Length: 68
Image 1 (cartoon, rainbow, N blue to C red):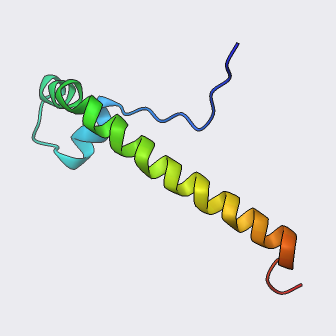
Image 2 (cartoon, helix red, strand yellow; image 1 turned 90 degrees about the horizontal axis):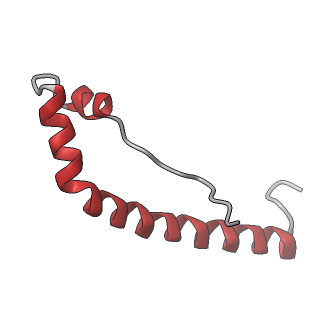
C-alpha cells in the first residue's frame, strides 16, 4: 500500500477568505473549475521544494550545518 505525505487540500472557506463577497456555491464552483490547474502547480512547486531540501541535506552532510 502506498503511503502519501505532505498532502494539500483546499476548502471553500479558504477561497471565501480571499473573496468574501462570493457565496459558498461560487467558491466551490471556482475550485471545481480550477482544481487541475491548482494541483498541477502545487505538484510543480512541490518538486522544486523537494529538490532544494535534498540538496540542502546533502550539503549539510558534506560540510556540516552553518555555525558548527
